[in-house]
Image (tube, rainbow, N blue to C red; front, side, top):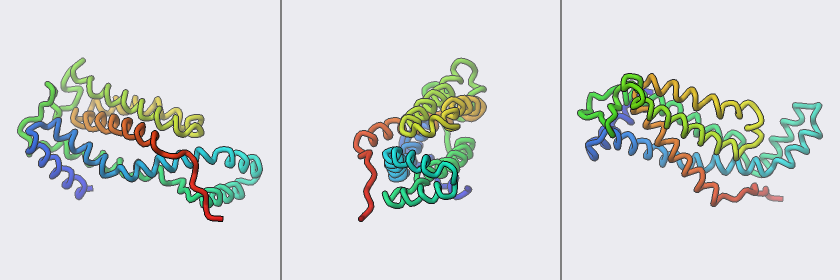
Length: 219
């Protein structure tokens, strides 16, 4: 984790020296990370769409093996292999984002290399609750709203998950983000908000150009 934190801290310092703006430096660092993980996000969306396109075949298998869970799992794996789909591909971007978020928290807490932490009238080095209401609530609210929009966007691509426990997370996660953002440095809420906005736009643009039919395996 220290390696990631040191790397992000160096990048943040470089971006700050280029712009002389702490807020712009955080935005640039967020966009840099999003661009680096773009191939993974592209693979995630393709995988989700391919799995959804197989829904009719999956339902047939579920009906056929409704009393044999082991046989159902085996049949599902064979179906995914036939169409060259990795059902775990969608987990990788999430697993990568978590340590990055923790590292960003450490980096934003340490502003020793930053002489001006203000951005649009907000001191991004201070916890949002220290900025007072309503000024301090702006970024946590934006972080929560954009998290909700991005979650709804993801659920629209995965109806099965929306009907299950993941659907509840669409409501719970934004509330948690607002709660945590309120008691953490405002710069972290800016990072989360910018990342969400980029993710929403990226998801929309990628969805426009991706085929929904899975690739057929060789006969």
